Image (tube, rainbow, N blue to C red; front, top):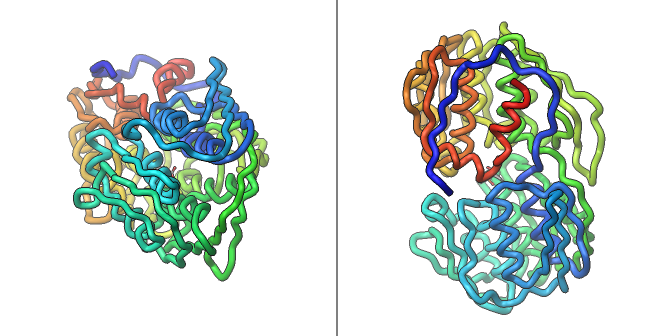
Length: 428
Ligand code: S3P
């Protein structure tokens, strides 16, 4: 990536019009990985252009899938469903989803391999996957539970596991290992995390079912996948917040994934008093999809949220914090300590950078407290900490700052959303 700082200024009046939002990152990872595990030809329409899903795609190629990528974002995956021993280290880049999902799959193969990642990913905790996988019989060595992960393929056995963290990556890792394990693998989590893995595995014929509050899976042969991936609610979140806080805005965001385990931001923004309407709600491949109408909402109020809703909006918390600065009164976010384990410590980095803009925001061990409504001054340089979601959240804050702001290392938005600036320009 080339080094790029980006200046945001109020050089327009309001956001107006409608746009589609690019493809869902979580679904793109799963689609290419599950197609590789299936025997036959899979067709994935609207695959993400983000760097992270391409890390998964490149690893799938290295594991033997024949993948053809078209310009129009349709990818064709031909696979015999049997993974081959890679000839090099498997590089996951910045992507926790790639590393954690692949760790589950690769633990149960009949070859050894190594998963590596960039500087940020190598600092993120992998104990959460190494622990349950080891209970299943996996042999993984690492330095202090961090990447690189040296995986020695072994025979796995199903376990019954109760996770104390609500993490879709951990859940998916264990369920995918369960596809290669003897017996049944049962998984329960403290709060439900996003369920794309369960929905998509069911669609490709995996023997996955619910029993006594556990998600259960057994060895299964997967069928090829046909999917048209919807727009990413996490990418859409920046437009939702911008539409709510930039005076006189009125936008429609089309074809967005509204899976209830992902769309917590809609409920919170509505509770704050945001004018949001869902149009044309429909079902696509088991996922709820719809259009979102957003209007400028000057009278929003702070709210408190915690517990079960946190995993439903975990990636949106930095931009919800920006929204909270424009709400009257106090917003309190609790139970979000896992934000400290993301691409940056998102509690620390969000609070630090929004404070520089003039926000009244403080961190707590498991969240933050924001007092509004604050006039954001801007006129400063802010850091993205090479964290795509922080960079995009700061951009949205910049749209309501009095003076321009400069965001460092802005190119990191390409991790999930290379079309970000182009789409904002379209609506200005
Ligand atoms: C993801 C799960 C979440 C989320 C990440 C994508 C997924 O991570 O933050 O961006 O696709 O499964 P955790 O499982 O660590 O909560």
